[in-house]
Image (cartoon, rainbow, N blue to C red; front, side, top):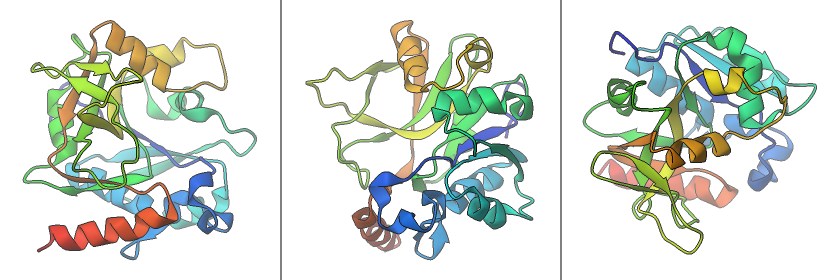
Length: 242
């Protein structure tokens, strides 16, 4: 990662129940579902490691012991566990609970139900280099809706020439989908008194203020939300290698 204001830590969301991935997730947590023999969470963590990130926080709730055992001994990045076994806190609440581990500086967030085939340069490095806390409250890695794999909804955001994102209206189709990866500031979560709350309202509020920006993903984004999507992702990986 570049110096200066670039994020030094990442929040990896691995606490969800994975209900859409059933029956596979009846016995294993969704982050450990494998595509081409590799667990989804490893695709994400390996991308951060290659981009130079040295530490990440992983929250756990459902089948938490399996995730902890899988991550035990990983050194790149070094892993800290945020334990949500007692209650599932949603992404916003999960960030708030993890702040003592994340620190005060801006940080990456990443879902574990998607990954990407890298383009010519590291998307995470490009995201870090584009981060400008003076102009932005959040910066998201976004992928083209039409060419991404496993996207069964009409996109999430419109993006202008400056990279500013606006939320798709209910009746619209948007050109870009949120990849599940972004850069956030700590303050909104530190100042929220709730224990359980969602992340998306913070993103939409930033968009309304003109302070939500995006970086277009280079390469191919793959969303693996259902059992059927595993085969789709594997076929797309094979095709991209041709």
